Length: 420
Ligand code: ADP
Image (cartoon, rainbow, N blue to C red):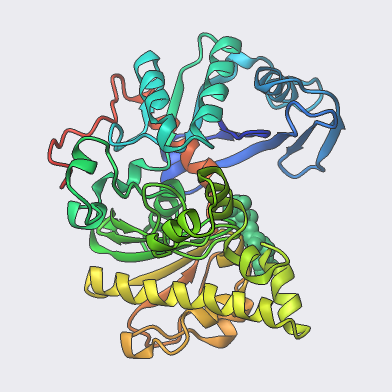
């Protein structure tokens, strides 16, 4: 069946059309037929790009006023005469939407209906930069394809299995019970995809594996996965906690925020901007949040770039140690995301001098592994290390297929204790 995966951001709409089925997914033979993106929605220089599998990317500059128009333009690319992808939009069996925050409501993907829409709306306060746009995308598809089922695939759902000891902050408990302040964890779709793929490659059941997944892109997070279930993730109530990221700092003493506001007289808006847009690799280097550029600058002798990379890698190493403790050892560490997939030097530094914990990379294998699935650990290493390129859109398509194939599927967690 043909499934469309949609990822709607503040000024972009990214989409991929997949041909999938349960059998193809089982054999990892489901593939994208085409991908595309509407960029700079609402701006004067917006554009629509489209790339059928195996063909060149075409980009057309044209004004796109809003997300409704962007989704309309995306759908139009799929039926354009000559590309042979779809005769008619009714061939799309379902549309899967990336939704960043499902709060505690959803521990699985779910058919998108009015109730889900209302709950995603409720979670806007937890993800103000993402959920509103995810909802806009859903509403546009619903209006343009009224008979097509939609599915919500949540970044947070995979992490709903994190136990209380790992998701509660040591704050007055009422802040959780009354205000839902807790660790939610993010990047769940990516962590879930790479862990499933590792099990598939090894012909092993996820229920027999303990894995540490490292998603290192612009946003970065790690997940401890115990027999297929997320038991900890470095991101928290918001996607600021944990690892050093492109523009976000990861772990910071909350006292720093108090100091910024009381002594430096920064406003909430200024601190929010500092923590989301001006920290991390960008803040440390003073130059860029782009790891490729930082590595070049560091090699050219830029001391701040070198320091930014050192801090970035040390934080990953620290969490590898923490998650090896949380899991009591692991079968493998998985690297994914733009940096995790393509930067051998970063992987090497993050795993440096961890042999006491059973982690050791093979320098040659690590150096050769760029953007493709590959083992990078040394022979005999107790904890294997692998590069597994992520494919969140494919997981969204598979989840959509699964949800529309099982009538009445619901992602509401049956566990009232949230300690499942
Ligand atoms: P996003 O989180 O926006 O999806 P990506 O997963 O694409 O981001 O990761 C972007 C990051 O990956 C950038 O910091 C980029 O510099 C880095 N990156 C991509 N290719 C390489 C490479 N060959 N070497 C080092 N870093 C890379």
